Amino acid sequence: MNVIRFSDLCAQGKAKGQRVFIRADLNVPMSSPTLRCPPEGGSAALGRPGGDWDDVGAITEDTRIRASVPCIRMALDAGAAVMVTSHLGRPTEGEFKPADSLAPVARRLGELLGREVPLQQNWVDGVSVAPGQVVLLENCRVNKGEKKNDESLSRKIAALCDIYVNDAFGTAHRAEATTYGIAQFAPVACAGPLLAAEIDAITQALAHPRRPLVAIVAGSKVSTKLTILQSLAAKVDQLIVGGGIANTFMLAAGLPIGKSLAEADLVGEAKAVIDAMAARGAQVPIPTDVVTATEFKADAVATVKPAEAVAADDLILDIGPQTAERLAAQLMQAGTIVWNGPVGVFEMAPFENGTRTIAHAIADSPAFSIAGGGDTLAAIAKYGIEDKVGYISTGGGAFLEMLEGKTLPALDILQRRAAG
Image (cartoon, rainbow, N blue to C red):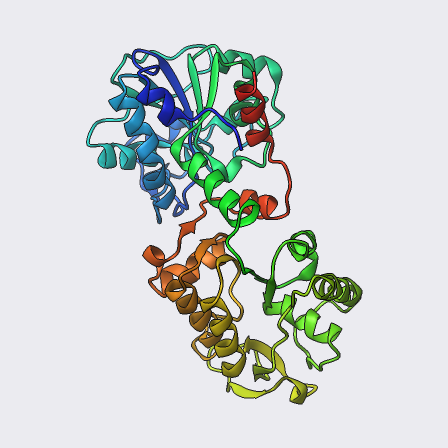
């Protein structure tokens, strides 16, 4: 994928003294604000009866902020005047509320950068920042027209900068004013290091993979990942399915699944994926043993049984140890692994063996591996294999859409700008 890279511009000295606008993904999870007794006259002055909000909430996990720091440091080191913005949560456009504020992000960013990071509101009509300085611009989704990619707003934002840098892969599947519109009108539009790394990793995994290429796609429903399964069926050598998706594929293979989560109306689609793979000499490994329970509870009695022996009142909550070891052996022989989704209810100890076995096999495999999706990242963290996965994607929806083979709007406009 041909895009202008911000790292190249910096290396060439083209960012020095320039106004650089970075669209980052700082949409971190936050705790709820707390209510305190107001100082005398406080709540009346703020127009909020009953007390003041003590804070806008606290950051509970800062991975996205830490991932955004290299791009900001790169711009500062290059001598640019740096503006950074992001969305946070789901604010109502034109109605700023304290809970929508990036103030906690500004504080955390300042700690990571070792300098104060001022937070500016009402920034669309102008930003004052000098070379070597950085300012965080308040929640961009509060601006009217942001989500609809309003041209007037996009042109105003583009006028703030000399170089636009998209470093927010997590929003690359959305055409918004700060992800798409600004890239149309800014003098230069390029990809930041985080976005460029995502492009390189997914291209390596899907466009130019080392074979065999193995994809793990798991989740509760086939319907939510059907297009991904269909797209991968034309590319991969093995397609490992897990969770409720595996149950639907087991039905398609004529196996009993008891009262397990599945989509019987999509058995035909599952069979079509199996047939498409088989026609290429590829395969969808179907579980030969499973872990069942009669209740969906962390303390439920877990029973390992052959796949054909699942009873009418059974819930399949994990792949069995035999299946897990067989899949682990296949992963050890892979050249490239794409992982999206745990293969069982790994949050519950009796049903985590499958996901744990798969996770450690990926970590130990010589294959290039790329992983993405919230539950997948949680499993990676739980089993402590972060440094053994080739690339961990920061994008949820964007990662899935790239797996589907879709063209992401924010990447498309960067490609077109690079082509002139």
